[in-house]
Length: 45
Image (tube, rainbow, N blue to C red; front, side, top):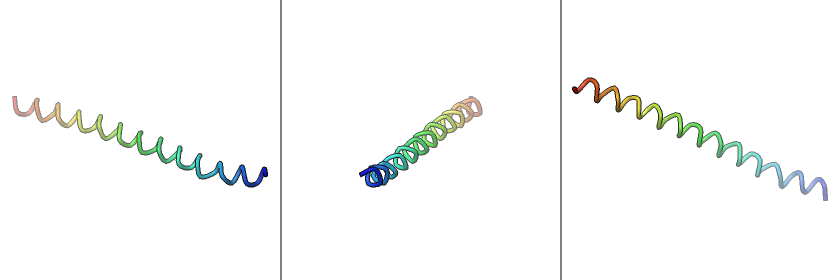
């Protein structure tokens, strides 16, 4: 039972790690995108 439980827990933790990684990446991208937008606005005006 213990072995099965730990085995079933592994993919879940892996998925959570991946999810966190992707959300962090997306947040970083959004921040970067906002910075670029503000820069272009400054250049245009």
